[in-house]
Length: 108
Image (cartoon, rainbow, N blue to C red; front, side, top):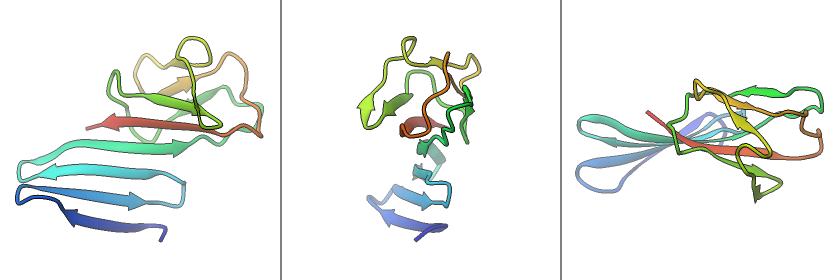
């Protein structure tokens, strides 16, 4: 199902588009007749035990970022910091390669 796009009509005025790509990113966009209202992304970070800075595929909207370490919600400022330009996150120490870090956010 990679690189497939599914379009589901939910009302006369809106459509939900779901795209699944090989990078383990799932993007969902809510579209109206006027255009995209809001899109949501889910990315799994490729941690290698050395990298401390991660840039996302999209710039996230302020207040929408959720970060999970091994499925548990991680605290901003404690476990990671948001980049000022909202393009990704930074860690003070590189995440272990055996930890799974997942990010979810909204973008336009």
